Image 1 (cartoon, one colour):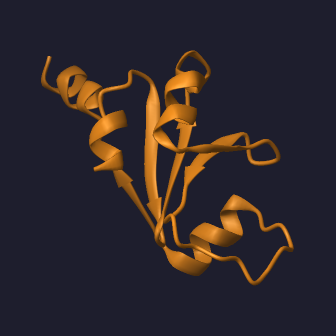
Image 2: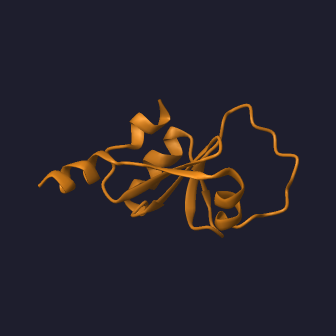
Amino acid sequence: EIISQIIGLDGIIIELIGNWIWLSGNTYPYRAQLKQTGFYFAPKKIMWYYRPPDYKSANKKPKTIEFIRNKYGTERIQNRTENMSLSN
């Protein structure tokens, strides 16, 4: 449901890492919409993330995005605008 709200945003890279959704790319023009959708900005990673609403973190030590990708695996979700540009 959350992904369907952002999948059409041009220039956004969507990654599913564990149970979280991470966004990078050209996110600046969409910051208000991302906040409204429930995303948070991670300034050290320069990425936006969405976590499950019932998530409680037991570990407050910051991790790099590379560490998180290696630990949980990552799946890049094809953005609709990428699909259109690939078919042209």
